[in-house]
Length: 185
Ligand SMILES: CC(C)(COP(=O)(O)OP(=O)(O)OC[C@H]1O[C@@H](n2cnc3c(N)ncnc32)[C@H](O)[C@@H]1OP(=O)(O)O)[C@@H](O)C(=O)NCCC(=O)NCCS
Image 1 (cartoon, rainbow, N blue to C red):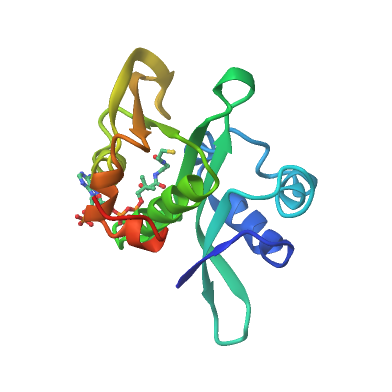
Image 2: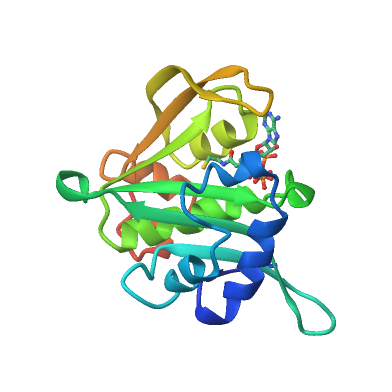
C-alpha cells in the first residue's frame, strides 16, 4: 500500500472506491463523489491539490484505492483554515490506513501554508478521535444533535482543530517536523 497525491491516472480507481462505499460514509466527503466529472476535476483544474489516496496495485497491475483524504481550504476570511475529510474502505479499517492518510494530510497542509486544520467527527467515533488526537487535534466545538445516523438517530458532532504553530512541538513527537525540514521543538 502506498499513499500518493491524487493524479488523473487514479481517478477511475477513486470513482470505484466511492461507488463501493456505504452511503453513510459518503457524507463525510461532502462533495459529489459519484460524479465522474467532479472527481476528474480534482486531479487537474483549479480544484487540484490537497487530495491523497491509498493505493494497492494488484498482480495484474490494476490499482485499487483503499482510502482517501482531502484538505480543502475554507473560503474567504477563513482561507488559512483547511477542512480534513478522510475515509477508509470498510474492509481495510483498523490496519493503520486512516492514521497514515491523516498524517499525509497534515504534512501536506502545513507545507502549503495552512495555519489551522479542522475535522468533523461523530462524537462517539473512537477511531477517528484517537487518530486525530494523536496528530495534535483537540476538541474545539461540540454540536449537539447535529447529524442523523443511518437509523435516523440524532448524534452529536465534534469539531476537532489543529493549530499549526501551537502544536509544532507536538508534531515533532510524531516525526512530522523532520519531514517538513523544520527546526525541532
Ligand atoms: C475514521 C477512519 C478514517 C479510521 O480509519 P482506520 O484505517 O480504521 O484507522 P486506523 O486503522 O489508522 O486506526 C486509528 C486508531 O484508532 C483505533 N481504533 C480503531 N477502532 C477504534 C474504536 N472503535 N475505538 C477506539 N479506538 C479505535 C485503532 O486502534 C488505531 O489506533 P492504534 O494505531 O493506536 O491501534 C475510518 O473508520 C472511516 O473511514 N470512517 C468513516 C469516515 C469518517 O468517520 N471519517 C472521519 C471524519 S472525516
